[in-house]
Image (cartoon, rainbow, N blue to C red; front, top):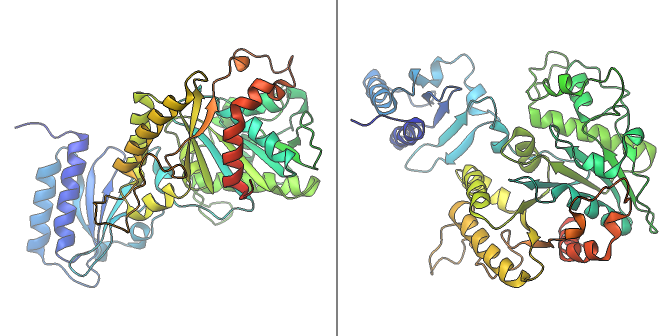
Length: 437
């Protein structure tokens, strides 16, 4: 008999959950920090008998061992507060209730990763996240160039450096001596103990001038480097939810980030005017900062990629997480747009054609609807559809940006070659953000 491994146990547990749901019960499958699974059965309106419970307990234990929980079957009627699970922010409904069966919900309990399944907050300004599954694709550079372009159209733009562990856009936009005294990490640690009032969190970017009254502001990850300022000690303490001990309101990590962004936008409004657009430069990889930025903090997510197998494998894994819920899949594909980074300038057409094919295949397997020739309602645009989520906004590779010293070349972004490389990206992203051509 073959061993049951982590993934196999989860698949078998979902099969048991479907069987229980088919008997008319709403169920929630919970996987704990060690990967052990338990099934919560809502018996509050339709009682279950002990024979049914014993049978499912035995089946779940046998099918998922050693990943079966200490309590394989938990009845909602026996829980002190069942709504902790049934109204959980982490609940993903994989199958809604219908006439024949109850609903199936999934909850993941882990140190990281819960933010990928949480819903969006209402924001004070248009919030756009720039994210790349892989680093080194020019995401922060694109953020700077997009911010200046939007300012040239008269917009007030706030750039938020969410790459907390490797701040990049802050360095591109502002020298250390011009940074505010505090950054995002300061807000996160101070607000956790109710002490965030009065933090200096933003500075206007002096190097970007606009003839149309546009402005660019920066909310850095770190405050100004100085004696006694310990960034690492703060960073070690920011990645957590709060129980609500100080303000009587529990806060998820994503909610804490949104509070920090709101504090920054409020400060810009006090000093000048309300930002029209907030650009969130997210860290790369599968991380809770990126998860919160894409799923909860943004109205639009620009996802950077190069056309290689490793990148698409990563996005396929990420999109597959959202694709577990039809509602989540629809919500995510409505806010996503791919960006083809580092497009070879010598053969851009063939490269982008191959990119579109790879991207469409990735989306079709995860976020798009399964359709056949007779299905007129499903959403599954082909590779040739140029306004679909998978259709990339291209950025041509520019050797002018390799090894550039931004302090010695403060006008680097004004190079004619650089502007030409970003032209289509700027036009397309501006239209998506503002609705303006």
